[in-house]
Figure 1 (cartoon, rainbow, N blue to C red):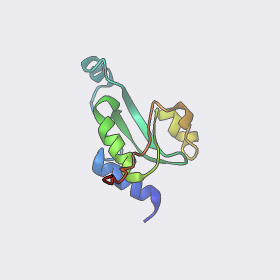
Figure 2 (figure 1 turned 90 degrees about the vertical axis):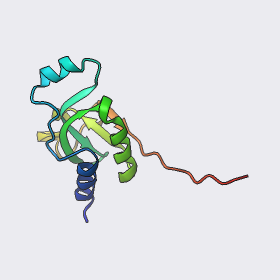
Figure 3 (figure 1 turned 45 degrees about the vertical axis):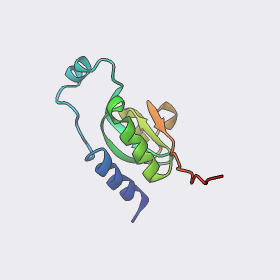
Length: 112
């Protein structure tokens, strides 16, 4: 299975379908959750490619994003729409990430 397809499938299992909407009203959502970090029309990327897009409430989805990152095994960048779409589709601007996650590897603990 190709890498992008695998990453997209894992993301849909953990976060939901591509193009996911978290609210019918962006301004209404921001009023309801003023302290949340929200990225509407976000793009999820690795250091080299985009594999998912949709709305993300980082405040609520942070644990899921870390889980996804651990499953994929490489860093994930949450980008605004313009940094990962259109002319930036094949070379996302990860340096502008709203948030990023690095994989956490569980080290085997051995008794001493």
